[in-house]
Length: 100
Image (cartoon, rainbow, N blue to C red):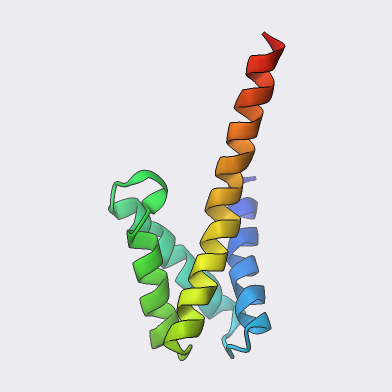
């Protein structure tokens, strides 16, 4: 299940990049997502904040995306994959607290 979830997030980055007009292969986009996620984990910060974003922007720019598009794609990707989950978690905690 976890592998499927991570693959779906990486596929989402590929679809986002395609929508933004970046010509990139699906495997390359998924590799960029995986490497940037690992870079974020190596930062030892919650959610890989800072490290994941820097790695993703750098790898996207190196892969041929314009810098502004790389930043936009990174921000959208992180909002959707990280912060959406955080908001869902906070909502779940509030619902569960209300039940007690």
